[in-house]
Length: 400
Ligand code: ADP
Ligand code: MG
Image (cartoon, rainbow, N blue to C red; front, side, top):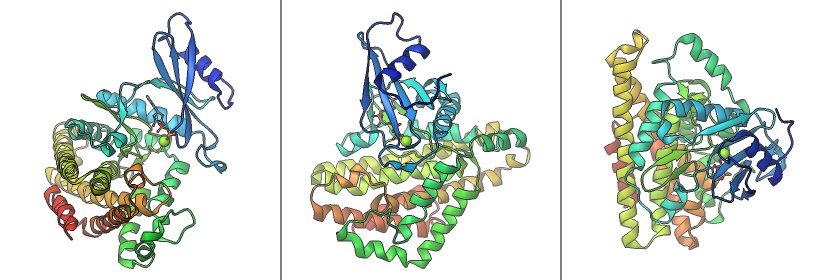
């Protein structure tokens, strides 16, 4: 085991070399630090033949904020263990962890250098028809196989304890479910939308519904979530996509992961008028709505099939219960998608979909649409019975 120290490039090289068979002969290794890690440091270690691995190390603080924001390094264990479990249930779409060192809080993993980050690709107007089907498969398998449908009570509770992840959950609890609804100093509100953001602070009906969603996040350990499934946590190429960055993983409501991804597709949909010209925008929007629809349809079909075929608890075998369970997941996912829209517009962690819109007027218009749809999704989540109704809400509000 390695004593904890903040890795420099040479440490990353030694770590990779010591724990990987990939390099064979100790041919010339070099390490390059990736600049876009928000919480952690990430190195690519490569030999002179182009073979490479990724070394990701948790620092005792959040990288973007520095030492003023201390943060548990246990998040590296959570990330490694969630990815390993998810890979067991969906190997095709989960990055491979080669090795985890609990002392160094460092993970050695597969380098996805042939892939690109989904958010960057969507913002550039790229379309991948396999996205929804593959992510539906990832979500259905990872969430079903870590749920009460198949896990024994004893094992499930031990796993819930192993993945409590309180510090990382607190970040979500604050940044997603609390800050945007108060005048909190961590918020990040553009002046042009300040009035609308202020409305959130006094919208008691909305706050009550967000409180319900937050309570679900705090107290519904249904399955082992990824916990941060936005479009920056997905790598994609022409054939396949793979999920990374599971340090927010814990046992929570199934609808949270589904809703996070759905929310990110809808966010990109609403950002499209600011990112593309009119013709490209309408193509991109049609693509995104189709993917949102397929994501839900294929997720629910696979999850239903797994519930029918594989459920082990005799009470949970009830088809009526299973149908109600899935309807509740849909309603939760709709609400969590709404929360994602709002927090990405007025909260601390903003996304390139919006911030790269260079025309300030267009950017404000997009942000207002995002806030509006976020509110509608949260408020109407229990009245929408299926994905077509949800998508009609999205289309209708566009023409508003
Ligand atoms: P953080 O949790 O600190 O935000 P990420 O896991 O999102 O870190 O990784 C930061 C960046 O490092 C990614 O956006 C990507 O550019 C790169 N990266 C991370 N994991 C891999 C990987 N397995 N293969 C290739 N690049 C990766
Ligand atoms: Mg991360």
